[in-house]
Image (tube, rainbow, N blue to C red; front, side, top):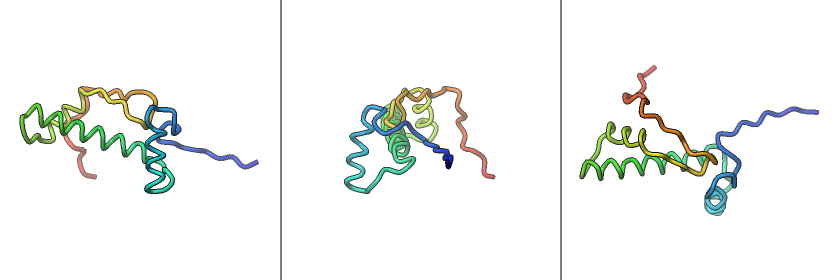
Length: 99
């Protein structure tokens, strides 16, 4: 018997609300949903939401610090995982140093 290890970056499609509907639309347009597709969708939604909220708070153009601060305090429940993401107000605010 052959053993296989399956790694997944997200819950199974259909486990989280909205994931089944998005995957059906995605497959019609692009083909099979591959690993990280739902995570990429969630990341884009989280970032665009934070940019919009930060811009509203600044009444105009917001910078990296405002967007990051908004991400830290905004609860987010995407479609890649059945449980909401727990953001932390203590996340680092500076970009990672180059290697």
